[in-house]
Length: 153
Image (cartoon, rainbow, N blue to C red; front, side, top):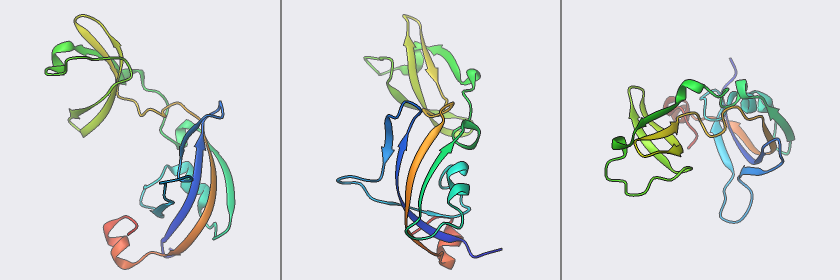
């Protein structure tokens, strides 16, 4: 197997409507460095960037299955309002970190009633086709330490 690389990219992410969802370009932003094979970026993007080199520009569309998955309706559920003890105002769109058996998870508030709050634990980009415009800025062999730690330094 080839030596994993640390790849540094500039990217802009848009949805099907062409709205910019995220970008490494622009003031105060920094390029993204990731270790190949470490699941640091979504699979569909990483596989499109395999074997790309400095200066390569890539436009790639990633379907939900290769991105953040399809929307799982079981992750949209009402919880008792008492679960938000100490929170004075709960509004749709707010995000909270919930403790789950699998560790901390971010949930979004969808609807608020007198006794229940409907939350959605799906990733905010679940069900979305993601469009990336990427430029490879750097690609180098990963150090032993980076491979051991599982991320770029």
